[in-house]
Structure formats: C-alpha cells, structure tokens
Image 1 (cartoon, rainbow, N blue to C red):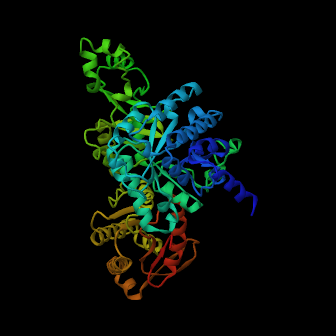
Image 2: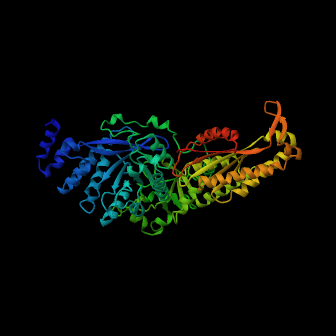
Image 3: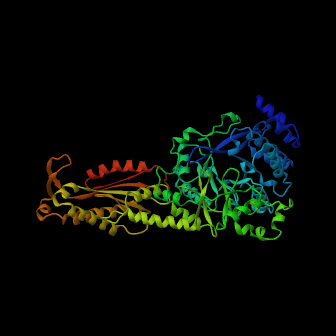
Length: 598
C-alpha cells in the first residue's frame, strides 16, 4: 500500500467529532483570480479549499456534507473562511480587490454566528465588508428555507456582496436572481465549456447577461479554459471571467499577478473604436456625487439640502461599485420628522444608508443607447441608469438624458446621410456592423455592392448620368429590401452596403440575383442605342490606356455570420470582405457569398 492511502486511513480512524481539528492540520486556501473581461485586470479572487484529500474525501463538498452530518459545519466554515480572509489580508492590493467565499446555505436558520464572527474578524484585519462576496450555491433549494431572505438581507445590510454560484445548474437560480438583490451571477461552467462552438449556449448566456444587467447585476463566466471561450464570453457581455485560461488556483499567493498580459493580446475590450452612441453617452453623463453605503444616514442630509433639485444620489460600496440609489423619499420621514435626527443618533436604531438604498439598473459606458433604453425601461420606477467604466461608478443617465441621446443620434444620422441617395453613411454602417457582430440571435449577412465599369460610363456620359445610375441603384435597394431586419447604407460613390438578419441563404441569394438582374436591365437604358447594341463602350482605364469596356453591372460580396456566432473585431469583417469583393468582380454572376465562423 502506498504512503498516501496509509496516511488517509490513519486520519479516518479518528471520530467524526474530530473533523475540524484534523481539517486545521491539512486544509489550505487556494486563490483563483477573477478578472475584468474588458481589461484583463484582476478584480478579485475566489477562495477554494485544498487538502481535503488528506482527510480521505474526494471533493470539498463531500467534506462539507460529512461536517454537516457531524454537526460541525458551522465550525468548519468559520475556520475555512477565517483562514481565507487572513490570507487575503496579506495581499498588497487587497483593499481594491474582492474575495469570493462560498456560503453553505444549510447554515440558514441555525446559529448564524458565522456572519457576526466574520464582521469582527474583518474589523481586526481592517478589511471593508464590501471586499467580501458570499457565493450562494444553487446546490440546495433555498426556496424551502424560511429564514433565507432574512439572512440575505442581513448580509447585504452588513455591507457584504452576494453572488449566485453555479447559475443555471441548480435548484432556483432564476428565482434567486428575481427575488434577491445580488451583485453577481456566476454562470455555471456547463454553459461556458465549448461556448464558442455551441449556438444554444451562446444564446442562453447572452440573454442571461442582458437579464442580469437590467436588474443591476454583473455576470461572471466560470470555468473559462480556452482563448476562444474567453473571447466569446467577453463579446457576449460577461463582466468578469475566471478559469484555467486566466490562471489556475494557487496556494502560493506570491504567484498572483495584478493583471495577466496574455489577456491583453486578445482584444482587450468590446469595441475597437468609439461609436456614435458612446460619444453621445459621454456627452450626457451626469457625474452626481455618490454616497457610501457604510456612511451614517445623517451624513446625507446636508447633501440633499445643498442640492435641493436633486432627488436621489448613487450609493457605492467601499470599492466604488454601484449598489443602488438613495432617494429623498426613502429618508424623508427622518429628514422632516421632529424626532427623526434624534432617532438616528440612538445607537439602538443603527440604521445606515444601506438600509434605505434601492436597486437601479447598471450599464457599461460602451453599451449602445438603444440597449440602454431597454435596460432603463425594463426597471419600472427607476430614476436613472447607473453607468460604470471598468466596473466602477462613472456617473448616471436620467430619462431625459437618454431621450436627448436618442434624439441627437437620429439627428446625427440624418445629417450624415448621403445627400444624393438619402441613405446612411459610413459611421452608421460601421456602428451597424459592430452591433451586428455582437448579436448572435439570428444569422446575419453583410452585402457590399460595387459597380463594375462605372468610371468609363461616368467619363463618357458625364457626372449627371453617373449620379442617375447611383440613384437608380438606391431606388432598387429600397424596392427589394423592406423591413426592420434590413439596413441600407451608402459607402460613397458607387459603393453600397446592405445588412440583413434572420433570412435564409437561399432567400437572400434569390433577392440579390433579382437585384443584379434589375440593375443590369435598368442601367442599360442609360446608354445610347449604339452602345446598347454593341454591348460595350470605349474609354480609358485607370492606367490611362484606351480600351473597350462592357456595359455597367453591379457585383456583390456577401459575408455571412451564422446564428450564435459572435465576435468583436470589426476590422476582420472589412478584411474578409475585401477578399470576397475581388472574386465577386471576377465572377460571371457578380455574386459571391462566404460564411465567417463556420
């Protein structure tokens, strides 16, 4: 028998009442980094149990189950978490990081001294409660625990952050997200593994992200093990990421880094350039002063008095993350009641700002304006959308500011329309492509249209006839493409763009062939009869040499993105289209269609 099994057997000879005593000898805390998807910077660490094998258990859950049977779960949890907090306090940047701790919901309804003990432990270590996030597992049905909501409220009011762990793989994660004011949703690795090649998983994760953001909750992708999974999770809007691709858990805390350079090589952000939405949002952002949830409630009274027209202020935790808003009507009774201030000074009352804060929708500064409007509308009765940059508070957008952004966007779009065709120009096309490549709910097609032999026609017949050919094509585009799922743009000159989503390849090809045939037939009528009869005209090429040219036609290069495929590199679309365009011009039909991500 090997040494390791002998060691395990010797430990298992002890009674169940010795589990905590033995655990103190072998259990260690391993930290796994959780990083900001957009920057690669470390946001915090999840504390994971190591050494349980030495006690003869195959997993941490098996050890916890045994401790619960022996009535030692509370003591074991306190020991494990205390050690994790102590290790966390030794990190040089702990004050700006978050430690994620697993919380066993079987402790609910019992002697919940673990919360009070941790609060006292944090005070001694000079760690703010907002630096700790308790992960509420879906492993057990919290819906059957009558004291669960009270415990969640107690943890939140104490300043701790809360996360739903293993979201989607347990009992009632969606119910938890609906009923409890959690800060994070950790999507179970089942949905992350192979997500880059699974349209169903991408669809589910994308909608989980959207739902969470409407509720002011951030999303963490767990178990990211490959570069493709990381890029897909980032492009789907996941705020935070953890997994082996970032870094493995380690008990050697000196190995932990403030950022991981290999992530910066993978795009480092959702958008490659500032969109019109992003520019307009940054113009309208209101940088209201914020209050900290741990502040005494009395401290905000002067803030309301000095800002009589401001009815609310954002509430942040000690790490600068939004926790909601404090509205004047939440504390009006305390402000105007004759004994309100006296009551606040009473130590028995012990009410802080966290007791009065209410949830608010949260969005990143780079969120498209239309999506932000949906987020705002999805949160009934909300006063604002709280904006963040790199997960930290950046300002707010009120309803009136959002409407200004939408109106100004429409005005800018109108101003940038091509004066000849009235179609949107290059900025609108670029923004459309950037939004479409991040939205994998339907198949999408980018069609770039370019006239062949336009220059000799323009040289022979003059600019007025050339403009007539251009307006003719724009009219054909409007006739063949109608509906909300179609986007028409004019790149400039004889170059056009059509964006389509939701249709089949066969239907698209049918419409495009009809467009090409109609244009070839209609534009032929712009030539003189003799040129029509000959099927060509004489002119000079771009090199200045005289030669004959066929009559004008249009060629179309189509790049298709299948349903579920998302990515963030708009430049890759342009590069791929350039390759397809040359083959479309050389083809007999003038139409070449290729797919990206297949």
